[in-house]
Image (cartoon, rainbow, N blue to C red; front, side):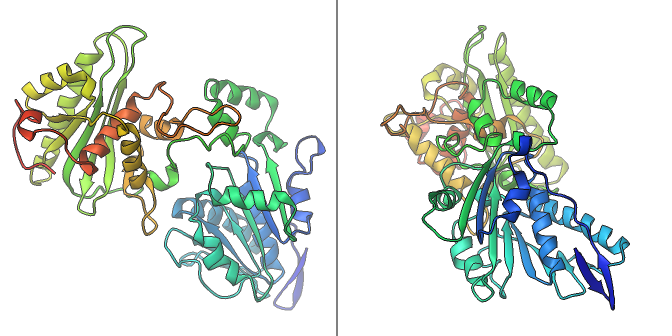
Length: 450
């Protein structure tokens, strides 16, 4: 397309959008559709970032004011990097595009503006009238973002909006998709695109991906096929970009909490699992270590892991000249034999609650910490951990038979040992201790307990 810069006309050719696999229309068909509001649920690597960048830059070249809105800084930066790549190419072609790094803005000589925003703080997306907005990873945004902040900004100029993302359970993105798909609302349209609709992904890669997802059909259907129903039975609303601790320096911890689930030493037995987290002065829990193992000697290995966790924390506090703080553990109450052994070693450990409704009560406690409060959760994990995020993403309820409803108090009891340990950890902190403290801590070192 043609645009002007200091009295001269410059022809800018944007990177082409793809037409999908086997002529299905792909990005081109969506971009050319006349709908004002477009809801696009798509599998990973379909090309949503490049599509959004194309829409924003085209609008900027036309002198429009548009925003790219992401749920977190990390995701926003991914879009900003791609926007700058195009900006540098346009600058090389002679177009005087101003790149404002601190504000994450591209300013075009004709008055066009592309700005990258994040929605993690309430009110952060209120502002002047917009000609358009791309809402990236729509399923991960807070629900009031659209109605309270972005929709009003489009009124004056009758601006457009593209909602793009991979589904993550039943949330506001699901509702928007249903609204657009129904056909009952003028100016709304919807698309569902799988990863395989991207013509640049070859069949060899597809075969490898399908092999890697073997045994994880729910994740395959959600992440690759973009099916909403595939994720609605997940226990937790979890997002790696939101719940991974992204700050290099760890805060000072005022206490540590751990959860233990015991398996067996024989082949085929349940796994033994453990997880430990630090508690900050702001009541944030940050998972710092994990254990998951099965087979011979697993009980010994698990006890050694607990010992190494406490020893390493003690040495860390001495090295950093910090006050020593305790580690409070909770374990499966059905395995009192192991709990008693740990008590004799001096560990502060109590049994999990147990009883009717205890599983769902513990899940609710974990879910409360995962939920955003003022734009932030209160449960994080360190980037090097692998098992914790995987379990948070796969722990799910049984998919009900047709006509039934999901049994929310009955998660699938397959490979859920670490999930139980996580629940015991949070329950240990946020739940109420049950039983006589003198009995619970018999054999251990009695100190002030939260």
